[in-house]
Length: 91
Image 1: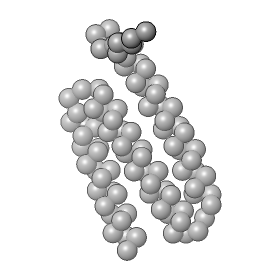
Image 2: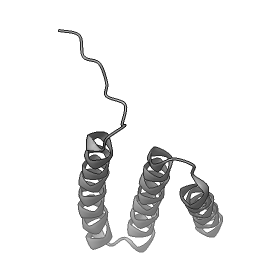
Image 3: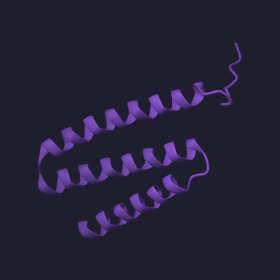
Image 4: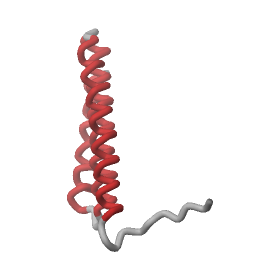
């Protein structure tokens, strides 16, 4: 049963990777890479439960934190580029 779940998750990674390669804009690529990171975290957590190994869960938590920080950093970089749309904030 777990083999089928992992195969579907790997398929999701390939679909997101295709979107990252074809994505017409940089935000599409960032979103695709974030999706890939989320699916990889899910795979690590599933393997942690399957093998009953707490160390995999710890690795997944650290990987999630690094993934989140990298997504924020890339998004900030893209927003600071000339021509990027700025969000309007009402005060």
